[in-house]
Length: 332
Picture 1 (cartoon, rainbow, N blue to C red):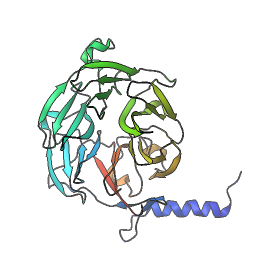
Picture 2 (cartoon, rainbow, N blue to C red; picture 1 turned 90 degrees about the vertical axis):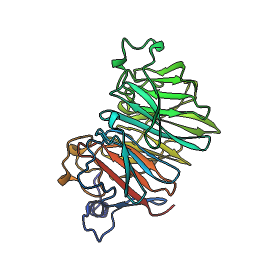
Picture 3 (cartoon, one colour; picture 1 turned 30 degrees about the vertical axis):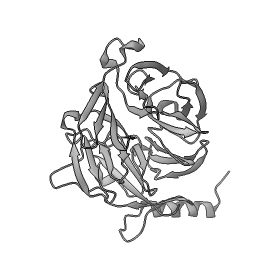
């Protein structure tokens, strides 16, 4: 079917709005309750400091401070919500800090970290003190040595149990109890439901009154949902190219998609809207796009995304120079 002239003009008009670099003109993305304004130039670093490669995740604490990973000696960089640099830490974590989730425990907040280079997960304070380090699950029987274990994401259940996604290793998700004792392995490599091809990001969220494990099954182009014992509950296969992570809040699921856009789904996996879809396929899922080719309103390779308490949105692109973007919520 041929597009009508009106439809073509509407698409061109939307593209012009998104691609505009005029600082006086707002760049708006999304629709309805999920309309956002692109905040140009968010995240200013001190003179002489650079991000380095951004190949990690984003976490936000109860004060809406934004924590981002990099591959540099500034493995965790912290900003306030306006993009003011507050601090950085993690020199000993340089090169491979990939997954990060923030958890409140007895009124105190902690970061759980997944490190692909050190083949381990860790628990840290918000100031960077490493409290413990957990190596590969030798008891699982899935590894000849620690080198094959390259965890990409970690999630913590309400009872303190840990779930670790070996996204760059064997495509298993490993379950540990609150004392860090191995319990079971979930999934393993495959394309059928319940199996994974790069379980890149995981999250535990309440669904139907119970906690559930949600998985960004990247190279199977889908999200999957499990109970905490590893039983498969649901698959969301639509509207996703290469989902890297997810952040479920209320009745929406935020999905950074490595292939050039951020997607928002409803609680049942149905599309609400796409944000910042890059019109050039050659720039999608590419680490080496130079700064002069970046445009406000267009993502490159979204690797992680997170909402704050106000509904504003922060996105990390996988990029060798480092790119973090903020989208301010226009309506709720």
